[in-house]
Image (cartoon, rainbow, N blue to C red; front, side):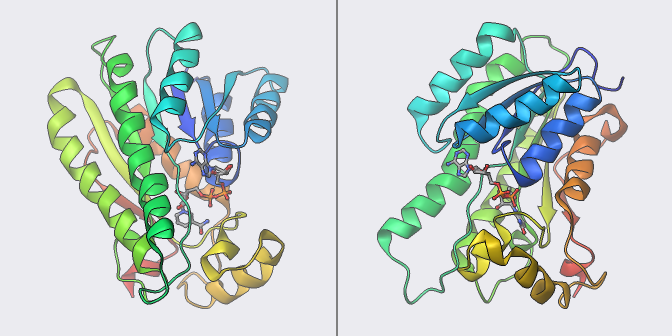
Length: 255
Ligand SMILES: NC(=O)c1ccc[n+]([C@@H]2O[C@H](COP(=O)([O-])OP(=O)(O)OC[C@H]3O[C@@H](n4cnc5c(N)ncnc54)[C@H](O)[C@@H]3O)[C@@H](O)[C@H]2O)c1
């Protein structure tokens, strides 16, 4: 299988895009370390992978905490002597405009959307360098990181930051055959979607209908459709692709 013998880390792997990427990579032979703030979700994804005959481990932690990242990477090292694929997928919505945002909300969003992904990369790179074969790092940015957003400027700012990080690391790590790309999803049917409009996850279908009218393809994405792009960027089929913010958005950013 495409990822036989490969070791992957998927952050925010307990739900939505991360869950489908973890399941998809494992189904193609990768051994997957699933990291999530919600340990039970990570365990459930791992149980699904193991039940299907795959290989996976679960790791609980807040990716914006350097201590939690150190602990999770130390756990991963107990079974993994190297890493081939790092899917940096942690993020949170911020449904506020500029007038009502607080220092606390600003800091939390910056920490979850930027600090977590930056420092997980820093901590995993030594493991990715072990084999000398290179690897693939993928960030989850957003369509909101490619265009301006009238609803969520702070979120847009953080996702633009990940695009800048992607381009910079692609240059820095190319000599080591480590490719770095970002996916830029449009609206996706996950529990997070309703959070962009300050609603709880039980309003997901209602909010998906609202977003659908703004997407040229006329619908929101299913998380597996975003995971398919992650799997493409993780594997050798994309061996000459690096530094790319890849819209997977039904045409959203063409408007
Ligand atoms: N859903 C969308 O419409 C959409 C669109 C564009 C980009 N994204 C991005 O996709 C990524 C995944 O979102 P999703 O839609 O799959 O969401 P989701 O709600 O389905 O899953 C998010 C997961 O992240 C975990 N998580 C949250 N904070 C964490 C932290 N600090 N440390 C570790 N894990 C944490 C949660 O426990 C949850 O399992 C995010 O970066 C998000 O910004 C989502």
